[in-house]
Amino acid sequence: MSVVIAVPKERTPGERRIAIVPEVAQKWVAAGHEVRIEASAGTESFYPDDAFARAGAKLLPDRRTLLDGAEIVLTVQPPAPELLETLAEGAMVVGFMNPARNLDSVRRLRDRKLTAFALELIPRITRAQSMDALSSQATVGGYAAVLLGAGSCPKFFPMLTTAAGTIRPATVLVLGAGVAGLMAIATARRLGAQVEAYDVRRAAGEQVRSLGAKFLELEINAEGAGGYARELTAEEKAKEQEMVSAALTRADVVVTTANVPGRRAPRLVAAATVARMRPGAVIVDLAAESGGNCELTQPGATVRSGDVMVLGPTNLPAQVPFHASQMYAKNLQAFLGLLIDRDGRRVTDFSDEILSGSLLVAAGEVRHEPTRTALAGAAA
Ligand SMILES: NC(=O)c1ccc[n+]([C@@H]2O[C@H](COP(=O)([O-])OP(=O)(O)OC[C@H]3O[C@@H](n4cnc5c(N)ncnc54)[C@H](O)[C@@H]3O)[C@@H](O)[C@H]2O)c1
Image (cartoon, helix red, strand yellow):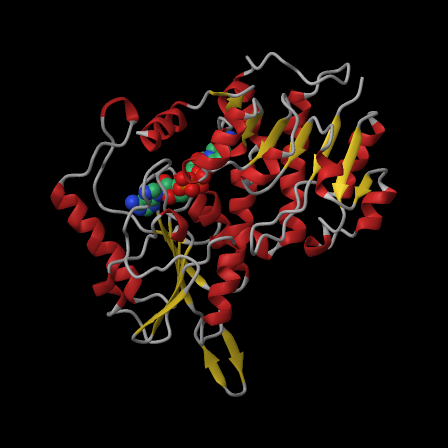
């Protein structure tokens, strides 16, 4: 048995990634499946059509032919309603779905009895690490954020001893030391900056220090019942704010990555603190799309406030499209390993924890509770 896998060209403005790369296409072709790619889908990420052709994929010039009979469609950005219009009942779509912001697409998935898996909903268990597209793309984002910050910073990052005098290294502050933050720390360290970082999770401290950065810590023990962090008291919160503000005023580049899943990003940088920052300082707010960690952030724009630049990039992984696509394609390859069985058939039993966790819509039935609630609310 074989499956028809189709990859359309991404149409979201600024999106330069593609959901498959020739190496992965070749694996599926070798396993007996049909891989279809929309012509020029890989151009922006530098995977040319002929590389896909050599891998045994079929290049198709128009979308209608591409999607006619497609059984699994792979995307990076959530599929637009128009794309879903062309799919036959029962087809599966796999990619980032961002359902809360794409309710029209969810309705179309539902009404056309399609099935969709949202990569951002994959449970973060050890077995799913190879499929964790949130992590792979956050890694790219953390790297790109530091380069963006370095490019806008009027200073060198490394310490230099030259005939023209000694240059002190730049100070980089990273707020939020998850996947993106740790990559930002590593990248800034490699460029020679002095790096400080803060995260509400104390456990992040060890990882931060192992990268050669300083972890900012409060002199309090916030360990509560059962080893979980307890809520900080108002007084402790004020101390935390004071510590972060002091670090902000000595930083040349600040990369903020703090997020709380399903919630608005926490506000860590007040406008009043920006006013006290060093002249020429740069803030790169990776949480711009989820509300911003800085009060002044405008998603997709650069704001100048006094002598401080506040950058709110919205799709940094797309700025490193070759490797971002490679990592994403590998994540999808691992995920499809669950979705296609040993006999080369699409599985119909989604009871596997990873499949059930990421199942957004199953043959027209919306399975993700928060999305069902959002749809009901929108209809009311
Ligand atoms: N498969 C797995 O086991 C797996 C996969 C991915 C990530 N993780 C872990 O999950 C954690 C976070 O992942 P992520 O990067 O996707 O998280 P994220 O993008 O949701 O958040 C980024 C960081 O912001 C921090 N943060 C939130 N509020 C903050 C505040 N007020 N001040 C400072 N920092 C704040 C979070 O603790 C987190 O580290 C990491 O420890 C990571 O190693 C585990």
